[in-house]
Length: 346
Ligand code: NAD
Ligand code: WQD
Image 1 (cartoon, protein in one colour):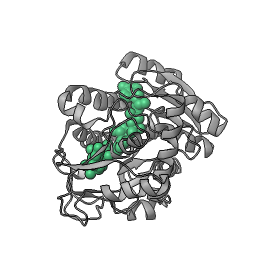
Image 2 (tube, protein in one colour; image 1 turned 90 degrees about the horizontal axis):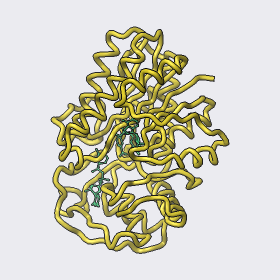
Image 3 (cartoon, helix red, strand yellow; image 1 turned 30 degrees about the horizontal axis):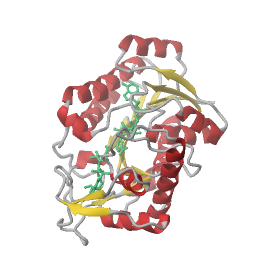
Image 4 (cartoon, helix red, strand yellow; image 1 turned 180 degrees about the horizontal axis):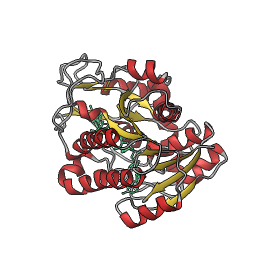
Protein backbone atom coordinates (compact mmCIF):
# COMPACT_ATOMS: atom_id res chain seq x y z
CA UNK A 1 0.00 0.00 0.00
CA UNK A 2 1.47 3.39 -0.99
CA UNK A 3 1.91 5.79 1.90
CA UNK A 4 0.93 9.42 1.36
CA UNK A 5 1.69 12.33 3.65
CA UNK A 6 -1.02 14.97 3.66
CA UNK A 7 0.04 18.21 5.33
CA UNK A 8 -2.91 20.33 6.43
CA UNK A 9 -4.94 17.13 6.13
CA UNK A 10 -7.52 18.13 8.73
CA UNK A 11 -8.41 21.32 6.87
CA UNK A 12 -11.25 21.84 4.41
CA UNK A 13 -9.74 20.54 1.16
CA UNK A 14 -7.24 18.28 2.93
CA UNK A 15 -9.88 16.29 4.82
CA UNK A 16 -11.92 15.65 1.66
CA UNK A 17 -8.75 14.57 -0.11
CA UNK A 18 -7.84 12.18 2.71
CA UNK A 19 -11.23 10.51 2.26
CA UNK A 20 -10.67 10.09 -1.48
CA UNK A 21 -7.13 8.81 -0.95
CA UNK A 22 -8.27 6.22 1.57
CA UNK A 23 -11.13 5.19 -0.70
CA UNK A 24 -8.62 4.72 -3.52
CA UNK A 25 -6.54 2.39 -1.33
CA UNK A 26 -3.77 4.68 -0.09
CA UNK A 27 -2.44 4.72 3.45
CA UNK A 28 -2.57 8.28 4.76
CA UNK A 29 -0.44 10.11 7.29
CA UNK A 30 -1.67 13.56 8.33
CA UNK A 31 0.34 16.46 9.68
CA UNK A 32 -1.62 19.46 10.93
CA UNK A 33 -1.01 22.09 13.61
CA UNK A 34 -4.78 22.58 14.10
CA UNK A 35 -4.40 26.34 13.56
CA UNK A 36 -7.46 26.28 11.30
CA UNK A 37 -8.99 22.88 11.97
CA UNK A 38 -9.94 20.49 14.73
CA UNK A 39 -8.96 16.98 15.71
CA UNK A 40 -12.67 16.04 15.56
CA UNK A 41 -12.34 16.02 11.76
CA UNK A 42 -10.51 12.68 12.16
CA UNK A 43 -13.72 11.09 13.46
CA UNK A 44 -15.65 12.42 10.45
CA UNK A 45 -13.09 10.85 8.13
CA UNK A 46 -13.28 7.56 10.02
CA UNK A 47 -17.07 7.54 9.88
CA UNK A 48 -16.96 7.90 6.08
CA UNK A 49 -14.14 5.51 5.22
CA UNK A 50 -14.01 3.18 8.22
CA UNK A 51 -10.31 3.99 8.58
CA UNK A 52 -8.77 6.32 11.11
CA UNK A 53 -5.78 7.99 9.44
CA UNK A 54 -2.53 8.34 11.36
CA UNK A 55 -2.36 11.91 12.65
CA UNK A 56 0.53 13.85 14.09
CA UNK A 57 -0.06 17.30 15.54
CA UNK A 58 2.92 19.20 14.25
CA UNK A 59 3.65 22.77 13.22
CA UNK A 60 5.72 22.71 10.04
CA UNK A 61 7.37 25.96 11.14
CA UNK A 62 9.02 23.88 13.84
CA UNK A 63 12.00 22.67 11.86
CA UNK A 64 13.31 20.28 14.50
CA UNK A 65 9.97 18.57 14.89
CA UNK A 66 9.56 18.35 11.12
CA UNK A 67 13.02 16.79 10.67
CA UNK A 68 12.22 14.29 13.39
CA UNK A 69 8.93 13.42 11.68
CA UNK A 70 10.66 12.65 8.38
CA UNK A 71 13.32 10.58 10.18
CA UNK A 72 10.60 8.50 11.79
CA UNK A 73 8.68 8.13 8.51
CA UNK A 74 11.21 7.38 5.82
CA UNK A 75 8.95 5.34 3.56
CA UNK A 76 6.60 8.04 2.32
CA UNK A 77 5.73 7.60 -1.36
CA UNK A 78 4.09 10.97 -1.99
CA UNK A 79 3.24 14.28 -0.36
CA UNK A 80 0.20 16.47 -0.82
CA UNK A 81 1.02 19.82 0.73
CA UNK A 82 -2.10 21.76 1.78
CA UNK A 83 -0.75 23.33 4.98
CA UNK A 84 -0.86 27.10 4.64
CA UNK A 85 -2.73 30.16 5.85
CA UNK A 86 -5.34 31.34 3.39
CA UNK A 87 -7.08 34.55 4.48
CA UNK A 88 -6.31 37.15 1.83
CA UNK A 89 -7.17 40.18 4.01
CA UNK A 90 -5.14 38.91 6.95
CA UNK A 91 -2.16 38.42 4.63
CA UNK A 92 -2.26 42.11 3.69
CA UNK A 93 -2.21 43.05 7.38
CA UNK A 94 0.42 40.53 8.39
CA UNK A 95 2.56 39.64 5.36
CA UNK A 96 5.40 38.08 7.33
CA UNK A 97 3.04 35.60 8.95
CA UNK A 98 2.03 34.50 5.46
CA UNK A 99 5.51 34.40 3.99
CA UNK A 100 6.67 32.37 6.97
CA UNK A 101 3.77 29.98 7.20
CA UNK A 102 3.29 29.39 3.48
CA UNK A 103 6.88 29.50 2.27
CA UNK A 104 9.23 28.53 5.09
CA UNK A 105 7.13 25.41 5.68
CA UNK A 106 7.30 24.50 1.99
CA UNK A 107 11.08 24.90 2.03
CA UNK A 108 11.45 22.82 5.19
CA UNK A 109 9.42 19.97 3.71
CA UNK A 110 11.39 20.07 0.46
CA UNK A 111 14.66 19.98 2.38
CA UNK A 112 13.55 16.78 4.06
CA UNK A 113 12.82 14.97 0.81
CA UNK A 114 15.64 16.21 -1.40
CA UNK A 115 17.84 13.20 -0.73
CA UNK A 116 15.18 10.63 -1.44
CA UNK A 117 15.36 8.61 -4.63
CA UNK A 118 11.81 9.36 -5.73
CA UNK A 119 9.37 11.97 -4.51
CA UNK A 120 5.92 12.80 -5.76
CA UNK A 121 4.76 16.21 -4.59
CA UNK A 122 1.43 17.99 -5.10
CA UNK A 123 1.12 21.68 -4.29
CA UNK A 124 -2.07 23.64 -3.52
CA UNK A 125 -1.95 26.62 -5.82
CA UNK A 126 -4.72 28.98 -6.77
CA UNK A 127 -6.38 30.76 -9.68
CA UNK A 128 -5.37 33.91 -7.82
CA UNK A 129 -2.02 33.67 -9.68
CA UNK A 130 -3.79 34.81 -12.87
CA UNK A 131 -5.23 37.99 -11.35
CA UNK A 132 -7.70 39.47 -13.85
CA UNK A 133 -6.90 37.39 -16.89
CA UNK A 134 -7.40 38.93 -20.30
CA UNK A 135 -9.11 35.92 -21.79
CA UNK A 136 -11.84 33.64 -20.50
CA UNK A 137 -11.73 30.77 -19.90
CA UNK A 138 -8.26 30.94 -18.35
CA UNK A 139 -5.74 28.42 -19.59
CA UNK A 140 -2.48 27.49 -17.87
CA UNK A 141 -0.67 29.48 -20.56
CA UNK A 142 -2.20 32.75 -19.30
CA UNK A 143 0.37 35.11 -17.82
CA UNK A 144 0.95 35.22 -14.08
CA UNK A 145 -0.01 38.68 -12.86
CA UNK A 146 1.56 40.75 -10.13
CA UNK A 147 -0.04 39.39 -6.96
CA UNK A 148 -2.67 41.53 -5.28
CA UNK A 149 -1.94 40.16 -1.82
CA UNK A 150 0.92 38.53 0.08
CA UNK A 151 -1.25 35.40 0.15
CA UNK A 152 -1.42 35.36 -3.65
CA UNK A 153 2.29 36.04 -3.78
CA UNK A 154 3.02 32.97 -1.65
CA UNK A 155 1.31 30.82 -4.29
CA UNK A 156 3.35 32.38 -7.11
CA UNK A 157 6.63 32.12 -5.19
CA UNK A 158 5.72 28.63 -3.99
CA UNK A 159 5.42 27.50 -7.59
CA UNK A 160 8.79 29.11 -8.45
CA UNK A 161 10.46 27.40 -5.50
CA UNK A 162 9.07 24.06 -6.61
CA UNK A 163 9.97 24.53 -10.25
CA UNK A 164 13.59 25.46 -9.43
CA UNK A 165 13.96 22.68 -6.87
CA UNK A 166 12.48 19.95 -9.06
CA UNK A 167 14.91 20.90 -11.83
CA UNK A 168 17.89 19.91 -9.69
CA UNK A 169 16.61 17.32 -7.23
CA UNK A 170 16.68 14.05 -9.08
CA UNK A 171 13.52 11.98 -8.70
CA UNK A 172 11.42 14.90 -7.48
CA UNK A 173 8.31 15.39 -9.60
CA UNK A 174 5.82 18.11 -8.78
CA UNK A 175 2.28 18.89 -9.84
CA UNK A 176 0.85 22.24 -8.88
CA UNK A 177 -2.94 22.32 -8.92
CA UNK A 178 -4.42 25.77 -9.41
CA UNK A 179 -7.77 25.57 -7.70
CA UNK A 180 -10.60 27.84 -8.71
CA UNK A 181 -13.30 28.35 -6.02
CA UNK A 182 -13.87 25.23 -3.92
CA UNK A 183 -17.29 24.96 -2.27
CA UNK A 184 -19.57 22.37 -0.69
CA UNK A 185 -18.99 19.41 1.55
CA UNK A 186 -18.92 15.62 1.55
CA UNK A 187 -22.38 14.21 0.74
CA UNK A 188 -22.45 12.43 4.13
CA UNK A 189 -22.16 15.83 5.89
CA UNK A 190 -19.51 14.21 8.10
CA UNK A 191 -16.85 16.71 6.98
CA UNK A 192 -17.03 20.17 5.40
CA UNK A 193 -15.75 23.72 5.63
CA UNK A 194 -15.21 25.15 9.12
CA UNK A 195 -14.61 28.86 8.65
CA UNK A 196 -13.13 30.65 11.61
CA UNK A 197 -15.23 33.65 12.68
CA UNK A 198 -17.06 35.71 10.06
CA UNK A 199 -16.68 33.95 6.69
CA UNK A 200 -14.86 35.89 3.98
CA UNK A 201 -15.98 33.55 1.21
CA UNK A 202 -19.33 33.67 -0.51
CA UNK A 203 -20.80 30.22 0.08
CA UNK A 204 -20.25 29.89 3.84
CA UNK A 205 -21.59 33.43 4.19
CA UNK A 206 -24.73 32.40 2.30
CA UNK A 207 -25.34 29.29 4.40
CA UNK A 208 -24.62 31.12 7.68
CA UNK A 209 -27.10 33.83 6.66
CA UNK A 210 -29.76 31.27 5.80
CA UNK A 211 -29.33 29.48 9.13
CA UNK A 212 -29.73 32.80 10.97
CA UNK A 213 -26.16 33.44 12.12
CA UNK A 214 -25.75 36.48 9.86
CA UNK A 215 -28.39 39.11 9.22
CA UNK A 216 -27.87 39.39 5.49
CA UNK A 217 -25.39 38.71 2.74
CA UNK A 218 -23.72 41.78 1.27
CA UNK A 219 -23.29 41.28 -2.48
CA UNK A 220 -20.13 43.17 -3.38
CA UNK A 221 -21.12 45.20 -6.41
CA UNK A 222 -23.63 44.79 -9.24
CA UNK A 223 -22.05 47.28 -11.60
CA UNK A 224 -19.41 44.99 -13.11
CA UNK A 225 -19.34 44.46 -16.87
CA UNK A 226 -21.03 41.04 -16.64
CA UNK A 227 -24.53 39.95 -17.64
CA UNK A 228 -26.17 40.64 -14.25
CA UNK A 229 -23.48 43.05 -13.01
CA UNK A 230 -22.03 40.72 -10.34
CA UNK A 231 -18.63 38.98 -10.44
CA UNK A 232 -18.12 35.63 -12.05
CA UNK A 233 -16.22 32.69 -10.56
CA UNK A 234 -15.73 29.00 -11.21
CA UNK A 235 -17.21 27.21 -8.19
CA UNK A 236 -16.01 23.63 -7.91
CA UNK A 237 -17.38 20.96 -5.59
CA UNK A 238 -14.69 20.15 -3.03
CA UNK A 239 -15.13 16.40 -3.63
CA UNK A 240 -14.36 16.85 -7.34
CA UNK A 241 -11.32 18.89 -6.32
CA UNK A 242 -10.25 16.18 -3.85
CA UNK A 243 -10.48 13.57 -6.61
CA UNK A 244 -8.21 15.68 -8.82
CA UNK A 245 -5.46 15.17 -6.21
CA UNK A 246 -5.82 11.40 -6.40
CA UNK A 247 -5.59 11.49 -10.19
CA UNK A 248 -2.57 13.79 -10.12
CA UNK A 249 -0.89 11.57 -7.54
CA UNK A 250 -1.44 8.51 -9.72
CA UNK A 251 0.22 10.32 -12.62
CA UNK A 252 3.26 11.05 -10.47
CA UNK A 253 3.49 7.61 -8.87
CA UNK A 254 3.03 5.79 -12.18
CA UNK A 255 5.69 8.06 -13.70
CA UNK A 256 3.40 8.77 -16.62
CA UNK A 257 5.83 11.36 -17.95
CA UNK A 258 9.18 12.89 -17.24
CA UNK A 259 8.26 16.50 -16.54
CA UNK A 260 9.61 17.62 -13.20
CA UNK A 261 7.04 20.40 -12.75
CA UNK A 262 3.54 20.66 -14.20
CA UNK A 263 0.57 22.90 -13.50
CA UNK A 264 -3.11 22.14 -13.99
CA UNK A 265 -6.20 24.29 -13.59
CA UNK A 266 -8.78 22.59 -11.43
CA UNK A 267 -12.23 24.04 -11.96
CA UNK A 268 -15.50 23.17 -13.68
CA UNK A 269 -14.93 25.33 -16.73
CA UNK A 270 -18.18 27.19 -16.10
CA UNK A 271 -18.48 30.67 -14.65
CA UNK A 272 -21.34 31.60 -12.30
CA UNK A 273 -22.25 35.05 -11.08
CA UNK A 274 -22.86 35.88 -7.43
CA UNK A 275 -26.58 36.20 -8.15
CA UNK A 276 -26.59 32.80 -9.87
CA UNK A 277 -25.02 31.25 -6.78
CA UNK A 278 -27.71 32.85 -4.62
CA UNK A 279 -30.42 31.55 -6.97
CA UNK A 280 -28.91 28.08 -6.85
CA UNK A 281 -28.94 28.21 -3.05
CA UNK A 282 -32.58 29.31 -3.02
CA UNK A 283 -33.51 26.51 -5.41
CA UNK A 284 -31.91 23.70 -3.45
CA UNK A 285 -32.81 24.95 0.03
CA UNK A 286 -36.34 26.06 -0.81
CA UNK A 287 -35.76 29.27 1.09
CA UNK A 288 -35.26 32.91 0.18
CA UNK A 289 -31.93 34.43 1.05
CA UNK A 290 -31.74 37.81 2.69
CA UNK A 291 -29.23 39.89 0.72
CA UNK A 292 -28.50 43.43 -0.33
CA UNK A 293 -26.25 44.94 -2.97
CA UNK A 294 -23.38 46.99 -1.56
CA UNK A 295 -20.25 48.55 -3.06
CA UNK A 296 -17.45 46.61 -4.68
CA UNK A 297 -14.87 44.79 -2.50
CA UNK A 298 -11.34 45.99 -3.11
CA UNK A 299 -9.20 43.55 -5.03
CA UNK A 300 -12.01 41.49 -6.57
CA UNK A 301 -11.44 40.46 -10.16
CA UNK A 302 -14.45 40.73 -12.45
CA UNK A 303 -14.35 37.26 -13.82
CA UNK A 304 -12.31 34.07 -13.44
CA UNK A 305 -13.19 30.65 -14.78
CA UNK A 306 -11.01 27.82 -15.92
CA UNK A 307 -10.11 26.27 -19.19
CA UNK A 308 -9.84 22.71 -17.89
CA UNK A 309 -8.77 21.09 -21.17
CA UNK A 310 -5.31 20.26 -19.84
CA UNK A 311 -6.61 18.48 -16.72
CA UNK A 312 -9.36 16.78 -18.75
CA UNK A 313 -7.02 15.41 -21.37
CA UNK A 314 -3.72 14.84 -19.58
CA UNK A 315 -4.95 13.87 -16.13
CA UNK A 316 -8.18 12.35 -17.42
CA UNK A 317 -10.00 14.20 -14.65
CA UNK A 318 -13.21 16.21 -14.95
CA UNK A 319 -15.46 17.90 -12.42
CA UNK A 320 -18.84 16.16 -12.39
CA UNK A 321 -20.96 17.92 -9.75
CA UNK A 322 -23.31 20.74 -10.66
CA UNK A 323 -23.50 24.05 -8.83
CA UNK A 324 -26.84 22.95 -7.35
CA UNK A 325 -25.33 19.73 -6.02
CA UNK A 326 -22.45 21.62 -4.45
CA UNK A 327 -24.78 24.20 -2.89
CA UNK A 328 -27.05 21.47 -1.51
CA UNK A 329 -24.07 19.75 0.11
CA UNK A 330 -22.94 23.07 1.63
CA UNK A 331 -26.44 23.62 3.01
CA UNK A 332 -26.71 20.12 4.48
CA UNK A 333 -23.33 20.61 6.16
CA UNK A 334 -24.34 23.99 7.61
CA UNK A 335 -27.50 22.50 9.11
CA UNK A 336 -25.55 19.60 10.55
CA UNK A 337 -22.85 21.72 12.23
CA UNK A 338 -25.35 24.11 13.75
CA UNK A 339 -27.09 21.13 15.36
CA UNK A 340 -23.82 19.90 16.80
CA UNK A 341 -22.45 23.40 17.40
CA UNK A 342 -19.02 22.64 16.07
CA UNK A 343 -17.55 26.03 15.26
CA UNK A 344 -16.72 29.50 16.47
CA UNK A 345 -18.83 32.07 14.70
CA UNK A 346 -18.06 35.49 16.11
P1 NAD B 1 -7.69 25.16 5.59
O1 NAD B 1 -7.26 26.31 6.42
O2 NAD B 1 -9.01 24.56 5.85
O3 NAD B 1 -6.59 23.99 5.67
C1 NAD B 1 -5.22 24.23 5.89
C2 NAD B 1 -4.78 23.32 7.01
O4 NAD B 1 -3.38 23.51 7.23
C3 NAD B 1 -5.48 23.64 8.34
O5 NAD B 1 -6.01 22.45 8.89
C4 NAD B 1 -4.39 24.23 9.21
O6 NAD B 1 -4.59 23.95 10.57
C5 NAD B 1 -3.13 23.59 8.62
N1 NAD B 1 -1.91 24.36 8.79
C6 NAD B 1 -1.71 25.69 8.54
N2 NAD B 1 -0.45 26.04 8.83
C7 NAD B 1 0.19 24.92 9.27
C8 NAD B 1 1.50 24.65 9.75
N3 NAD B 1 2.42 25.62 9.86
N4 NAD B 1 1.80 23.39 10.12
C9 NAD B 1 0.87 22.40 10.04
N5 NAD B 1 -0.38 22.60 9.63
C10 NAD B 1 -0.73 23.85 9.23
O7 NAD B 1 -7.57 25.61 4.06
P2 NAD B 1 -8.11 24.90 2.74
O8 NAD B 1 -9.21 25.71 2.19
O9 NAD B 1 -8.31 23.45 2.98
O10 NAD B 1 -6.85 25.14 1.81
C11 NAD B 1 -5.85 24.15 1.63
C12 NAD B 1 -4.79 24.68 0.68
O11 NAD B 1 -5.39 25.05 -0.54
C13 NAD B 1 -4.07 25.95 1.18
O12 NAD B 1 -2.72 25.86 0.77
C14 NAD B 1 -4.79 27.06 0.45
O13 NAD B 1 -3.96 28.19 0.29
C15 NAD B 1 -5.08 26.39 -0.87
N6 NAD B 1 -6.20 26.99 -1.62
C16 NAD B 1 -7.42 27.12 -1.00
C17 NAD B 1 -8.49 27.68 -1.69
C18 NAD B 1 -9.83 27.88 -1.03
O14 NAD B 1 -10.61 28.68 -1.54
N7 NAD B 1 -10.15 27.19 0.05
C19 NAD B 1 -8.31 28.08 -3.02
C20 NAD B 1 -7.06 27.93 -3.62
C21 NAD B 1 -6.01 27.37 -2.89
C1 WQD C 1 -16.57 35.04 -4.55
C2 WQD C 1 -17.48 36.13 -5.09
C3 WQD C 1 -17.10 38.30 -4.13
C4 WQD C 1 -18.42 37.31 -0.09
C5 WQD C 1 -10.93 34.05 -2.63
C6 WQD C 1 -9.44 34.31 -2.62
C7 WQD C 1 -8.74 33.41 -3.57
C8 WQD C 1 -9.12 31.95 -3.36
C9 WQD C 1 -10.59 31.74 -3.15
C10 WQD C 1 -7.38 30.81 -2.18
C11 WQD C 1 -16.74 37.45 -5.35
C12 WQD C 1 -18.50 37.79 -3.79
C13 WQD C 1 -18.09 37.22 -1.43
C14 WQD C 1 -19.51 38.12 0.32
C15 WQD C 1 -19.91 38.68 -1.99
N1 WQD C 1 -8.51 31.39 -2.21
N2 WQD C 1 -18.84 37.90 -2.36
N3 WQD C 1 -20.21 38.77 -0.66
O1 WQD C 1 -12.75 36.33 -3.99
O2 WQD C 1 -12.99 34.53 -5.76
O3 WQD C 1 -11.40 34.22 -3.95
O4 WQD C 1 -11.13 32.70 -2.25
O5 WQD C 1 -6.52 30.72 -2.97
O6 WQD C 1 -7.38 33.61 -3.42
O7 WQD C 1 -9.21 35.66 -2.99
O8 WQD C 1 -13.83 34.09 -3.44
O9 WQD C 1 -15.72 33.43 -2.05
O10 WQD C 1 -14.41 35.49 -1.42
O11 WQD C 1 -15.86 35.56 -3.43
O12 WQD C 1 -20.58 39.29 -2.83
O13 WQD C 1 -19.82 38.25 1.50
O14 WQD C 1 -18.49 36.43 -4.13
O15 WQD C 1 -17.13 39.67 -4.41
O16 WQD C 1 -17.30 38.01 -6.49
P1 WQD C 1 -12.76 34.91 -4.34
P2 WQD C 1 -14.96 34.62 -2.48
